[in-house]
Length: 326
Image 1 (cartoon, rainbow, N blue to C red):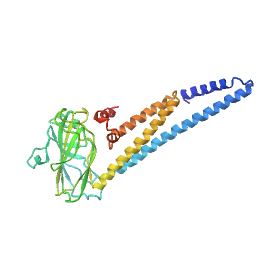
Image 2 (image 1 turned 180 degrees about the vertical axis):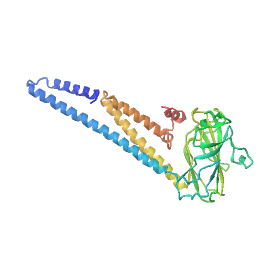
Image 3 (image 1 turned 90 degrees about the vertical axis):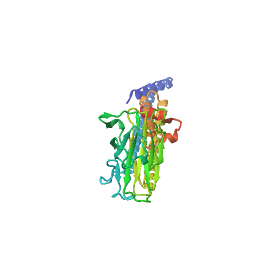
Image 4 (image 1 turned 30 degrees about the horizontal axis):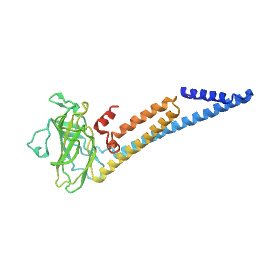
C-alpha cells in the first residue's frame, strides 16, 4: 500500500468520525469505522485491479505490434540477393514468389556530389566508397577521414537481370534529412528539397510507395540526400524495400495498422491515468505513468509511417525533430 492509499484511508476515517459525531454508543461507532475501512480497502483494491488490467493490456498490445512487425518484415532467406559493390543481381530471384527484398548491402556512394543516372556510365566517375547500407554516413571514412553529419551525397545502385514488363514497387523510407530518388533519370520520389547548403535544402520525413515497370533488363536507382539538420546522423539510415506492388502495399498497410493501434491504445491509457490523477492527486504514480504513455505515443507518431504528418500536419519538421530527442 502506497503513501497515497494510507492518506486516503486516514481521510476516510476522519470523515467517518465527523459523520458519526452524534453517535453515543461506542460499539456502533467502532462498527461504522470498521465498515469504512473495509469499503475503502475494497475501493483501493478495485482501483489496483484496474491499473494492473491496463498494464496487462499494454503488454498485450506490445505483443500484437511485435507480431504485426514480424508479418510486415519477415525474415529473409539468406540466399536472396543483396547489393554487392553497387550492383543487385536479380537473376535468381522470383518476383512475387518470395517475400519483400530489403536492399541492404553495398551501394556506391559519392560524397559532396549530386549525380544523375545519365552521368553514371561505364567510364563515369567511380564511387568514393561502397557504403554498407542502411547506415548513417557519419560512420563512413573517405581517405582515412570520417565524414561529418552535415553535408550531401549520392547513393547509387544498379539492378540487373530484371524481368521486363513485370511491375515492381519500392517502399522508400525516410532519409536524413531530405532526398530525391531517381530511376533511370526519372524522379519518382522525394522528401523535402535537397541542396548543397542549409539555405538551399528543406528537410522532410516522408515514407512513400513507388511503383515502376521496367522496360529493359536493368535500371539504375539513384538517391540524392542532403542533411543539415541532424549532426549525429545523415544519409540512408533505413533500407529501401523491393517487391511486387501488392507486397509493398500490404507491408505499408501493416505498418500503418500497427502504428494506429499502438497510438490509439496508448493515448487512451494516458487519458485514463491523467483523469485518475485528477481525481486522486495524492497518487502521483498515475501521473508518472500517464507521462510515460504520452512520450511513447509521441515517438510512435514519428516512426513507421510517420502518422504525425497525417494527424498533426501543423507540427512540421522542427516539431518532429524535437519529439525525437525528448
